[in-house]
Length: 246
Image (tube, rainbow, N blue to C red; front, side, top):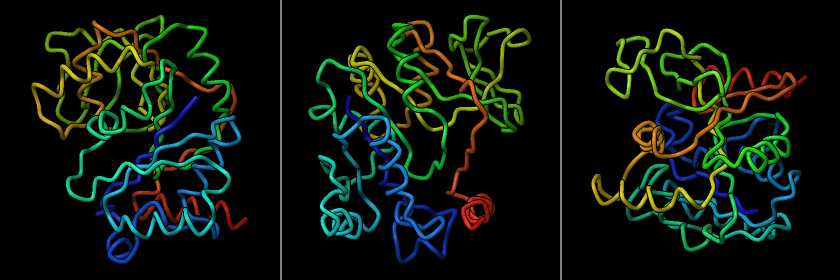
């Protein structure tokens, strides 16, 4: 199995910290976030990883080279000319990722210690096209799931918006997406169709929402308690740092 780590983001919510370094190299407990994600993937048996870069790309590339890729086979998907967002970033790396097997997509700013191997096993056993790390935590935007944990829509609780339009959400489970997903190669065809309509730059979440009825997408809630931080915000970065100082 392979993986893609999204490390291209501008990290604007962390300014001024990210005015001099990429968000992926922001440290938590003395260790860059990128390394923490790579170690998590390696611990799950994943040794071939593509990393997309845009903001301070040479700093990320030099960091990886100076550490011999931490013993991993790493490919750089260079987006320095044009930031493609998550959906566009996956397609830009398709030639590397599309080997007929599922792959992991992991945000570089998500720090979490759930059992990734268990999530991979669940994905393979279910036969789903996509498996999404999901949690019952506070958010303004939620994925909507039916009783079988199949994703059927999306809602913004602040605006009351529900997608697809007309979906009755009262009886559905609302879960927040955790920035880690297992994706089967069956998704690439739909991604290409979507890109032809919206262009090269697009987020993966609207794609998922639009394709709820066409793809089998399942929520995955870890069986054990775990930590989860989006370190892309100053307040959650500080919470993560406090935990790893203990």
